[in-house]
Image 1 (spheres, helix red, strand yellow):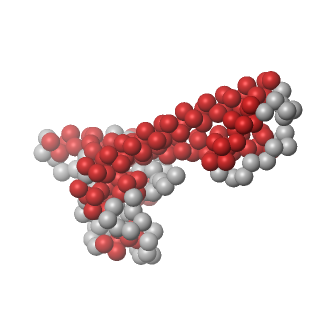
Image 2 (cartoon, one colour; image 1 turned 180 degrees about the vertical axis):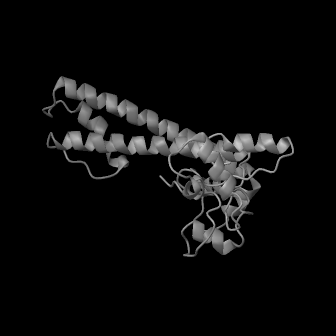
Image 3 (cartoon, one colour; image 1 turned 90 degrees about the vertical axis):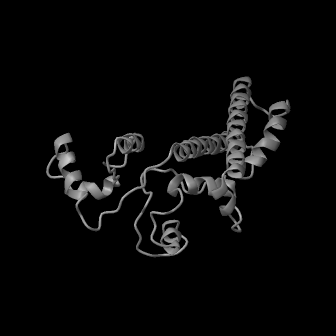
Length: 220
């Protein structure tokens, strides 16, 4: 099957029925699709692609990996949305002649003072808008922090994550994201292949977990 939404669930279900299941990244199946796309032509392309001797496959993720993957995807979206809110607050204030340095901590520190400063020539409607943006920012921060607590708890309870966090520079976020993406790494022929997939070294490697996994490292 092509690796896509639901393919890991179907893969596990079919394995339980005794089938041999192989997942292929969609970009490796696409070259075998003839003319216009359809279910029949997709099935034909999959049947052709799976027979290629150099075809690369995606390992079927466990429930635990999918949980971690979902956690990181949602966390990443909240982090991006929080950054967007911070940038919008800074730009709106700049239009009123109020300049804040880059960085969320400066907004967190100075926005309450700006809202309370009656001497600033800010309209009532604009103050209400800033107050609503502050509420949104605080809510997003609380959500991200809750996800971080879950990640840290998972990293402490997972033996593989514990080994990864012993590596200098690798924290709970990176460790859990890596486990969610590649599991035990058995798909890679050697450690250098995994390092190349992570971008640490350059080498032609099989992208063992290149189906949509979100960012490999989210350090925000």
